[in-house]
Image 1: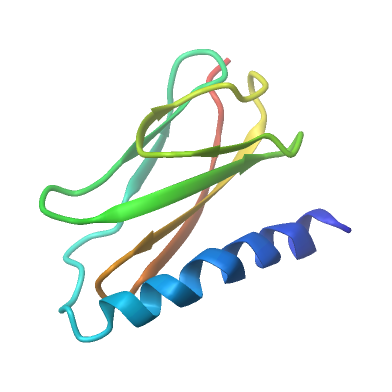
Image 2: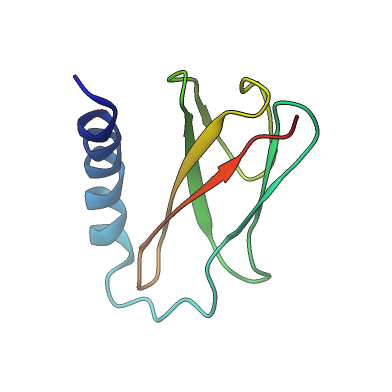
Length: 100
């Protein structure tokens, strides 16, 4: 399975249930912000008052979940982040390089 297919499968598995639970709950005011952190770490900042859950997958297929400081990635690896929330737009994806 290639990287894109795996990332699509992960996103599909988590977004559908969240969309059903959050339907009609309003609109998100902002998307999460991604930045590099310390060595092997990324930082996912969730806007105040928002509810987002995030999964991060690095180029070595290391999968981590959470928000805030998320570590355990290979230093300098490319990390794709999938976040899903309970209000529209329900889904956010972005990419950041883990801290070196």
